[in-house]
Length: 123
Image (cartoon, rainbow, N blue to C red; front, side, top):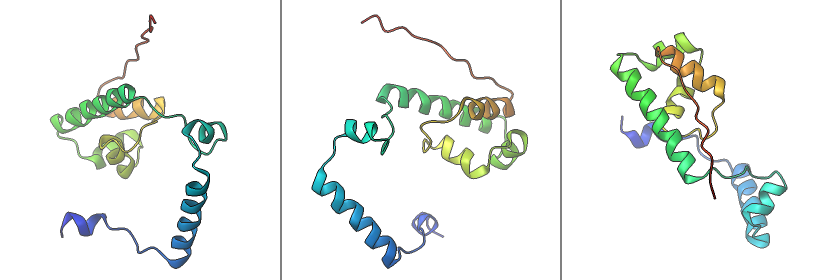
């Protein structure tokens, strides 16, 4: 089976297409700014690119450690209690706001720990 076939989701229904079109039309008409979306709780505060890259580096390190230890996602699930699909999303950068508990559980399942550092911006 090709990768394309694996990643296809269920076909969009007419109701879903109509709902999506209505949402698109609303935002095209009003063209809200990111700040106004955040203030109205319609969007989360964006993550800085630097923070995102650090998070991706952290999950890349955890993935490399998992592979080095010869552990499958199923084995990490058994040790951490984090669902296999969730572990995969973490390792592939699809989760940009994991909880501290998730980070700790993932690392602990690999025999590691996560350390946090506070950096002060001197500007």
